[in-house]
Image (cartoon, rainbow, N blue to C red):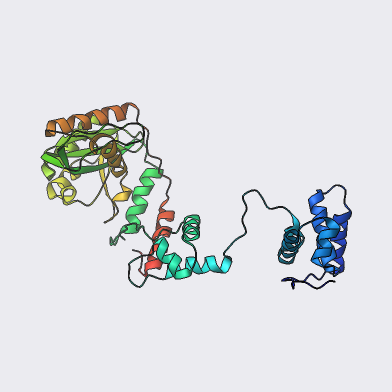
Length: 363
């Protein structure tokens, strides 16, 4: 072997490795490039200098060095071509584990949460790599999601009661999710709405004039998705009783009515309780405290807010009520029920996991 620059690698082959490489080198069915790479490794392992290998196989010095390093690192797999666009990893598994551990278990010294740049500085990993792995593992330090654990001592019983109505409704009965959307404001935009166009979205000014409010009382039929709705000026127990009478008048007399509602004081007013007591076909069911998500009508309120209220401009309360009533009519013509899939057991298991994370005790 002639003298030259010292190699940064050393290749020692056992009998099995040599036999496999010689098989590759002699093969007439494998790609020529793969056979030549096997010959390069064999000659270097036999002690031939890089210059002699280059002259013998008509390849360049970088080619010899590259495939020898690849073989040292990955064995026979290193002689195969990489997929298009493939790049060798700059950071190993330990680096990525350290990145995720920092993001999940530590906080920056001078801020409430990590940013991509802060994590990159802390871990000495490039910003693009930090961003890519945070996205890959679904880690979002910049976001939060609100939650409140119910303090209702009868939480379990109420969840099982209401979820049971959704998943296994009683025969000859109607299950209605009832609630009111209060303080719907008739807002008149101070400037005209800019229409949507190619390349830009609709423009709505944040300045507005207030022209009063209305309250939407709604009852969602769980089985069909249809809604009974009324707009009223206030949301006292008097208005709620009037809405209950409206429901009573519009539901066939032979059907029982199960009413799912939250713990708003209006719903538990003594006169409301007395009204229910005088009508045995009405069965009130109250959601646990801080658990309005159990009431399906809340999801429908989200729909009407996004599609009929939020992006419009109203000069009077009457103008506000008109699209609300129109939305209800159109919704009932093409109504479909919300599909409830969560069982009481799955809800309670999720609550137990959350309580364990925060060190609390589920009710």
